[in-house]
Length: 500
Image (cartoon, rainbow, N blue to C red; front, side):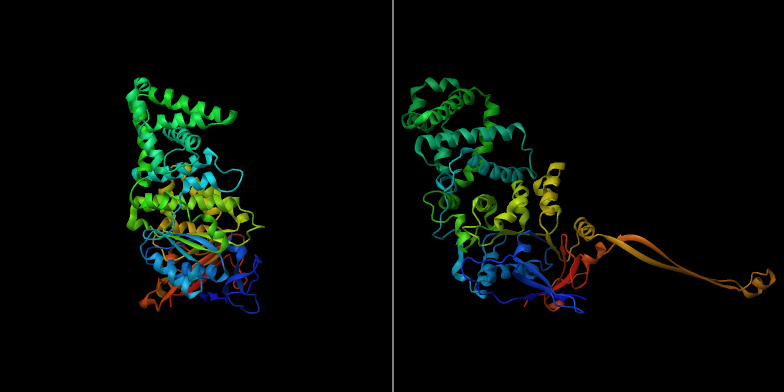
C-alpha cells in the first residue's frame, strides 16, 4: 500500500539552535502500533539522489517536497538551474514557505557580482590567496570545458592537463605578485601577450606592447621577502624560458586549452557577472540566503554551465572551511539535471560534507547520465559509484532505463522468494484400465525457494507519473542506506506525492 508523505509545520527555533534529529518530513504514519517513519535534518545531511525519467514527476513530486522542507526549516542553500522554469518554481516555493526575502537571484539584469578569483585571494582564512586553490578552481572548470567539447572526461594525469595547470599556476602567481588582485580580463590579456619565441625576449617592440612583460616589471618592483622573490623567479623562468622554448604545436594546444575557458568568462554576461567588485559570496548561504544561479544551461549553454560549476565549487570549498560551531545553520546544494554540473571533485566533497552540515540533493533521469559526464572509463564509473554510495537517501520514480532499474533493484536487495509449482495430467480411462496404470488423473504440487529481487526492475516502469491522468499523484520508492523502515520493516518504502 502506497503511503503519502506528510508535510510538517515549520518549527519555532531560537536563533542558533539546531537539533539534528528534528524531523523534516514524515514519510509514513504509525501502522499497527509501529512508529512513524521520519526524515530528519541529520538524514538530509547524508545526501539525496532522485532518479526518474523525463515526465516521471521527480521534480514536482519528491523534489518539491524536499525543497519545501528545507525552506520551512530555515536552511540556506545554492540552487543550480538547467531549465528556464526553475527560477519560477523556486520563487513559488519561497513564497509558499515565507522565504521570499531570502531568495537571491544571481543572473543577468540583477545587481549581484561575484569575482571568484579576487574572492579567493581576499577571503578570510589562512588558505586565502594560495595559488594552488585558484588553479584547482580553474581545473574544475576546464574539466567541464573538455567534457563539453569531447563528450567525455580526460585523464587528470595526462600531459595536457598538467601543462594547463602549470600555465595557470604561473599566470595567477604573476597577477598576484604584480597587482595583488586577479580578474579574468587581466589574465587573458597577459596570456595572449606572452612571448611566442626566444627572439621576442630581446625585442623592444614586444617588451613595450606585452602586458605580460609589463606585469613582470611591476612585480619586480613590488615583491618583498624571500618567498615572493622565489615565486617571481619561478614565474620569470617559465614565461621567459620554458614557455617560448616549447614547440609551436605544443604551446598552441596548451594555450588553446586555457584560453578557451577564459574566453567564455571574458565576454558578455559572464564578464559582467564575474569581474569587478564582489557583492555576493557563498557565505550568504550560511546566514540563510537561497542563492539561485539564473543562468540555465538550456538557455545559456556553455556560459551557464561554466558559471554554475564555478559557483558550485566555490560554495563547496567555502562550507568545508566554515566552523559549524560559529555558523551552525544547515545549507543545501540543489542540482536538478545534475549531470550538467557534476565534476570529479563532487565525490571528494560528498565524503566529508556531512560534518559541514551540507545537504546535497541531485536529481537526474538515470545513472548513465553520470557515467557519461564523468567518463565511461573505469575511473569515471568509480567516481560516479563513489558519489552514489555517499548519497544515502535515494528516491526512484518511474523509469524505463534498464541500467537504473537494475541498479535500484540491487540496492534494495534480494530476499528468499518462495515459488509454488504444480502439474495436472489425465490419461484415457480405458487405456489406464487395460495397462493397469491406476488412477487416470495425476496431480502434483510443490514449493521451491530462491534468492530474487525483492522489488523487480519492471516495477519501476509501472509507477504513476502524476498529471491529470493519474489524479496528480506521483509514485516513488524510497531507499535509505542502513535503515529498516518502521512502518513496513523493509529497507524500502513506497510513497505517493501529490502535485497539488
